[in-house]
Amino acid sequence: MTKVDITKDCWQKSAIKSDGPVCLVIRAALEPVAGLARFQPAGFPEIGHVIYEAPRDGGRREKVCIVDSPASMANHLESVCLNGLDNELHPELAGMPYVRCVTDRGDSPSANQQPDRVVCTSLTEGHRIASDYFLEGLVSREWVPERKKSKKNGETVDPAHWTGTAFRDQLRKEFGIKEVKRDKTYFIWPEAWWNIYTTLFKYDPNSLLHGVMFAREQIKLYRILTAHLEATGAARVGTSGVKFDRLGKTTSGQPI
Image (cartoon, rainbow, N blue to C red; front, side, top):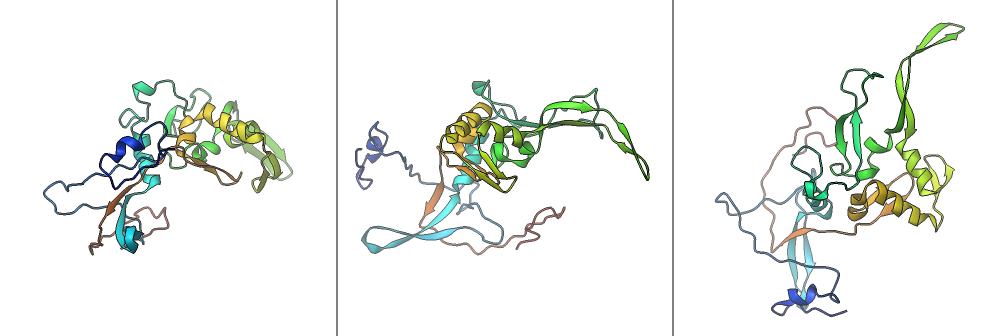
């Protein structure tokens, strides 16, 4: 592999040669827009902007700010696969497999109405195909009408509902992994790893490209494509802000 000296001019040409390194570093001079004198990097509740001291030549250190993390950049890379905000693929990617979570259009399920309202897709979910929206969903659905059951204390009603195989169970079967204790412990045979890759490629190649983790099954596949955006010579700006969680659905509350 060709070694690249980034201190020399035009080092980028050597970096992208066929025998060059697998990592391409792009350096750009950023200019603030809207007449401002600074740019605002991505921040995290309770932590703020990530600024660290990176080691440099000669024993010196340089402050570097993470403007966008690999996880955040993956979201940007995935968004270009979509055709605007309609959760559909861009025309140039038509036919690429991905997973959609759909639900009923009414307040209650009906045998006359197949679930078809799109909630989210594996291109918009942070955990991609490993999101619970998909894993807890049903595949090969069947309609079960309302049934009455007789018990000693009287008659009960089992409401009409959709039934089928949970997508998580379907994936576990196709992965070919050994279930030691359900939802707790799984053993992955060495030869089963290829089944995992081919199964994910069949349903959602994007999950292989940007990485995916199935926590219960202890399956973690690293990103093939990764990116991050950093600013050098950074310093912290002491401005404040408040994030409100009006529905109380997260643990962040009201970070300041």
